[in-house]
Amino acid sequence: MRDVLADLMSIWRAGETAGLATVVRTMRSAPRQPGAAMVVAPDGSVSGSVSGGCVEGAVYELAGEVAATGAPRLERYGISDDDAFAVGLTCGGIIDIFVEAVSQSTFPELGAVAHDIDAHRSVAVATVIAHADARWVGRRIVIAPDGTAGSLGSARADAAVTDDARGLLALGRTGILEYGPDGQRRGEGMQVFVSCFAPRPRMLVFGAIDFAAAVARQGTFLGYRVTVCDARRVFATPARFPTADEVVVDWPHRYLAAQAQAGALDRRTVICVLTHDPKFDVPVLEIALRLDVGYVGAMGSRRTHDDRMERLRAVGLTDAELARLSSPIGLDLGARTPEETAVSIAADIIARRWGGGGRPLAEVAGRIHHDTADPQVEGELTDHLTRH
Image (cartoon, rainbow, N blue to C red):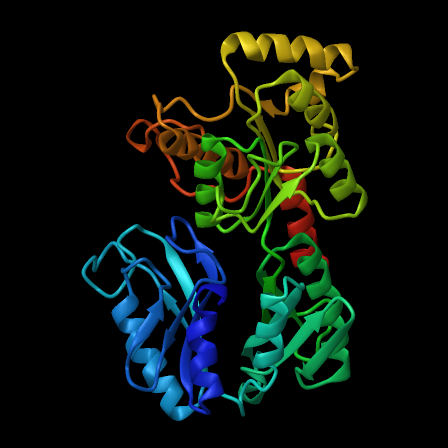
């Protein structure tokens, strides 16, 4: 919903009703992940996407119908071997889409949710998408780390869903939870889609050089909150990095240590060290490679890399810690310009996040889309989705 929130809020603030379609479950090779959304406005205009084009027309019609009737619907779209031309996903995947009417009367908490998202505060929206009693479908509860708003219909269901949703929110994951009809831990009959809106992941770019400006643009494009940091005030200016969320003048290792101590980094954080100067990059990498973050990469030639590795071993980093370093940074794309190099770095970040091999898809068999490259995160998510 994040991608269409501005359009949805315009309709909501005007006192009108929108049709909101949200991907809640995917199977096999689906083009969009759970949480992807489409908004159909009262004038018929549309924003967002739920399938990359495969079933947009059918979902558009359904969203308009639901906005008019107010009756939410859970629909499954896929493709059958017998009828490849039926409405479905030509990629062979299956997606479940929940469609609901959104207005100030049906979703009074939306304004507060939007405010939390804009302020980079964690918030989750848990919505009943399937229930034996149709009156429960569409009910929701909004969950923040320190409070809730709304209700699913019973104190028991609210308590169970709130507890589990906070677990998903801590992981920054979106998914479906299943319970008995009144929120019983062991049972079935009620499915709840939890859409988590964690703050944007961070990208820390150390080294205020031309390559850093291109990397910052790529980071913003990928949805990161980008910080550029350099100790040289003459280079670290907002004018040189207009797409960065913030430009910090500080020694990289000192800034990184302070951010880690403040709890401002997490397992989604990306760190790109582009200084290729040992007085800057060795101290910051010594800290970065001991943090539980998603990616650490460093720029430099092969000779710079070999020298850097010797210096990092000399300050006590282990082979396991050094193995986490992507250096020289980026994938082998033959990049030369700062912009091409930034694409190479972005590709490396994406590949490591999702477990991609960096090879042309034409040379790879099996699934195109990867679920996760982090088995610990996947295990934690599976535990939260099956614990009851």
